[in-house]
Image (cartoon, rainbow, N blue to C red; front, side, top):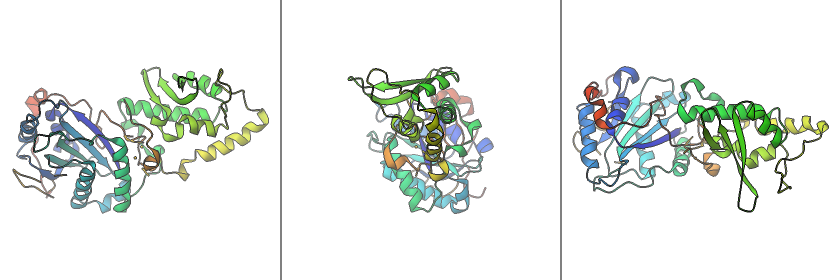
Length: 356
């Protein structure tokens, strides 16, 4: 189970995406405080409440939860709604409007939670975008419900990635490949440079190395190594290359003697054997609340994250739990537009309840 978190300023585009019956085979499995008659009424319900706190500009909450294909038989609508509501409760998303949309366009079970970040009393919801907390919660719920933990980034379908997620996985793949050929930081830097990737060591005010960043020079996007994957932090790469920093002037160690290189990289390959681990957190990389007033529907189907400690080690399928620009399960494009920019499509899809 993994979570992707995003916020925005307009419900219209997001609702039309989340409730796209034609492309996503969407059904609504739970809701609260929202008129489900059409996408237009869902959007209007959210907008009306958001006006109670105009100082909150990003009042749109969107969380996608994705599960392993191996858990499909365990996750009927009732069970997946139960898990989603428990996730929201623990994240502090309560006393507010929400709709949980389930998509059936992919082999893995996944849902989209759309909620109002302005609660029923006009207060702003806080802590709902914490990726550290989310990673710990998804890990705990995966264990609690007997779900499957992922087996690493090699299982992620690269062709479906977009934006920064696509860049992050390209960096991950290239760095991992380079590390099989390089035994010093200087060699690694020069190798990656040929792939359009810049390696920079991050130093504190005293000149001590505190981290490493990687930049895709083609896209001009930079990630800390630990945000690409915990195994790519400075300390972990350092350990894998049997590298010890002693020289405060030149941070690149002299090449390891040729006769030792084979043993070093046999050990390093063992260290990075993902069949022995459970993968890194997106958001974030095992793995790290609310009832219907208008319709009462309940149960009917209708800048990058950071390394966050042991709670994130087993996060499923994705790198670090991260803020994303798109939906997790269905590959939505991000930056939800203003409600009015989908005016012509707002009544196109109507909610579908159980009995698909």
